[in-house]
Amino acid sequence: MWISALVTILNLALAAAVGLRLLARAGQRESGPERWLAGYFLCGALLGSGINIAVYSSLGEGGLALDPTLTTRLLMLSTFANGFAGSCIYVFTWRTFRPDEAWAASLVWIGACLFATTWLFQAATGEFVIRVFPGPAYWLERLTFTGAFAWAAAESLHYYRALGRRLRIGLGEPGLQSRFGLWALWASATGALALSDLAARTAYYWKTGEATVLQVEQAMPIIVATVAVTAVIGSVAAASLWLTFFPTRRYLRWVEARAIRAGVPRSTPLRP
Image (cartoon, rainbow, N blue to C red; front, side, top):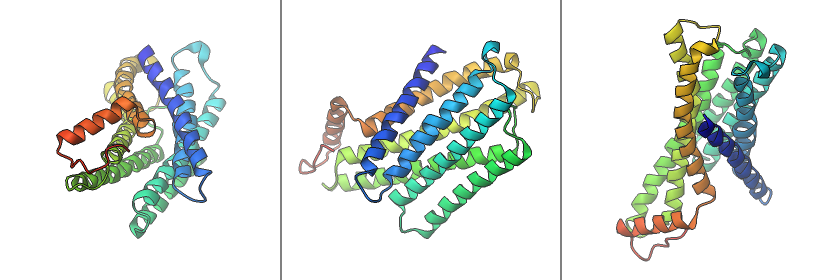
């Protein structure tokens, strides 16, 4: 469990570092997608995730149990923060990869409207409580959130492959291609983390047949298994995010050597 806690802390710290760096970069430009990406890291990966961790960690120890009213308010805040963060990812992907595509702009609006609608519905129907299946709005919100990362991963992978074709004829930079690959890996891992909650709740329902009350004793084996899996996925997400924004010299040398072994013409710049 301590490994999972360490991975969680590292991911929160990394989200803060990347978000603040992107904000500083965005302040140097009148417009650009950086501020939208910063919005995701600071509002979702840091604030939203941090609140959710605090709420669900309170289930494990009776002395840490939160007041139901406070729990509801925290869940409302974290869901709102995650919805805003998910919208930021949609906007970032649109502005970065498909700025001139009408369908991409429409997808952004659909995602933002779904986040707003599901949040308002959960607030109006009292669904911001801890239970196995919070309701259809929760599931729709989670799928919309995951969709943002699926889109980001698909676009990054497309550019990664396109740059690979350019490299083979002596155009482009291996370092740049590697960053698109890392971003696709990060987006895929983050989307998988978002789905892990749905998978854990479904597994609990199959085991107990209970769709409302969450019994910690019954859920503990599932929680332990989920924590182990998410620790691995979280480590992949953290590593790929770190190398995207803070590539080490060793990693850059590896990218160079890999490009040379693949037959990239020597005229191609190798350093990003």
